[in-house]
Image (cartoon, rainbow, N blue to C red):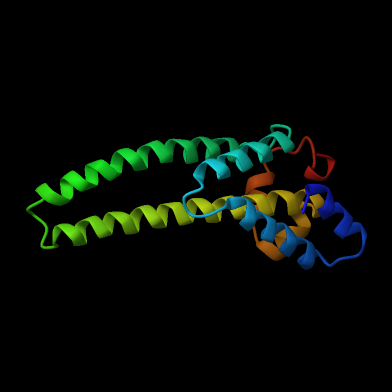
Length: 156
């Protein structure tokens, strides 16, 4: 689905929930797999551009996703070394390395989930306004979009 299709769904009388669900589904698709951090950085950059610089979080998150790719490669090698030389742990080398892998996978899953939710909240707020969505999503929308009162997201 294209971003323009969200507006069409809204004007065609689809419920707010149906439109938000469609946006969320697109966010899941665009987020890719667990390891697709570069792809998420591109989506984040598009959100920043589409917001005309008003929504700064995606720019920071894109930087974080790209930085994390490098960090996780370096940490992988360090974890391999530390899993061999750490004599203070009662765990086996394999168990220590598995703990590292679990940490990395959790980190990547969180990165993916945050991108999906950012995509969803941005587009839904742009279409329906933060006040309308606050009733459905809570104060998260006000926290992200409440800082810049000069322009409503519906005008972006």
